[in-house]
Length: 375
Image (cartoon, rainbow, N blue to C red; front, side, top):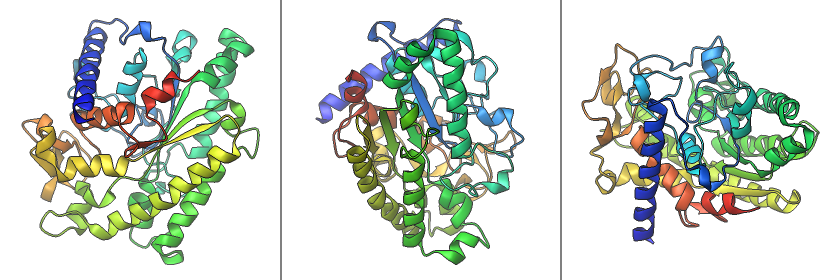
């Protein structure tokens, strides 16, 4: 299995670099012969490709040195030195990374490959990320998808739009902010109201209602069938929390326990949805174990630093977002984390490799390659 995954990574890296080179030259990337399907991305800053550029938000990354490894070294709005996990999945599917839904260029033929609805600072709960002022809450992301489907129908016709939406891949990466930018904040009302297990029950039940077909506004009723949902990563191991709460550069174990408890409730909820929603297939992505392995065994994947950010300030570069005034590492490929909260491009491709080709220990009941192959 390890040899197969290593070979898959080589193939994915080669395809991604070929695709990326085409972007630099202004052409279309990917492997068009694969028969690309649309991808629809929902979530937070881990997958936001630039929606917050168009909002009055304090959570933005459309400036250097973010995007240092993007073509022309552009700060696209991604909280990364380069590409995100969703970008690599798009490339595997045979297309360029999808545009942010708020990007004015997301019209016409660009609609055919899907859209990115994610927004930095957002969470499962509406009050999460309030300190950033504007962000797209989950309900707003869904409403924008509804508008997208109408635009797509205008462009290709109603039946064709239904086929594109039904065949698409839906990806959710959300939940970490509900701790980092809500429960763990000073004077948090949620922390006074709930214990961590109670809070996790609230998060999972709220998320289920957001995913479930309870009204015509929900994604399932709008055609979503192939849905991947990432669990909560090891939030106690990100540089921001190591700086604020850690001892001697070690992960903050009680925060990781909160994440594991949330994950223990999330997977049964997705199993319930698989039984309740006819024709839908929810795939559970074990992001916690994938990222924990990168942090705990950095040398195995060519990293040397897993508890400090490449770009930031303070101890472990764990304070503030990455800006031109930050301390920046010399070799980004040696770091698991780009900034106090987000992985580097190299870490993202390793995460993408696991979601595309990994076994049921990291993604179940099937991986994304298998999910995408379904009719």
